[in-house]
Image (cartoon, rainbow, N blue to C red):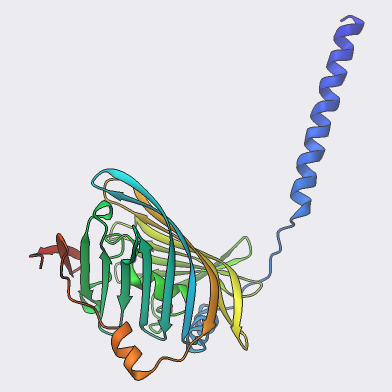
Length: 289
């Protein structure tokens, strides 16, 4: 090997070492903080249940970056949203899409839920159903059930068939059905014990939807609410709808009795080309109005 070859080889070694050090430096700038989780599944479930009990009525404004698939075509929208939440079971969201302040309307109450998507590009469709017939996870572009659980109302009253594990600083609560199949996974940070991710699974244990939560904000005496919400919903054709909701203004809100009656009652599905009812977690087409 001549002097030039030796020099080139030495330069390559030095360059590789510098890249390696630079990479280590970037990792050290944001160290991963991990904390031990809860000692038992009952204690973990108790913490989640108490978090839901402490939730407060609220009103929020923000922005949504969405990607929907309709009729085989992808539609990307960036639009303002308004959201109202009255725990434990009432929620409403308006999306200002295509110059329509109510281009998207999502809501639910104790008994039923609905999703209206007015723009033709989004299917001009109205979906509704009763909780007793299933929440239609994986069937709707965004399920009201997911938004309810975003704000702390994770269904943990039934403590059976829940299992606790811990991985990389997260407590992972896994819910199984009577046949032992996984229905849901809830990922909770061991440090602040706030939910960071929820995964939802279909009958064949295939993930049909998941939500990631971040940037929690204290809105009222230790009541924390996520202000960054990412929802991914899998479609049967292999595509996936996604929403990134950033809440810019979140504050406690006291609803009047009249507002409760107006905000959390479904409107008539008038003027929609497609109307579907959820029955046994299936979408059944109904005549439009």
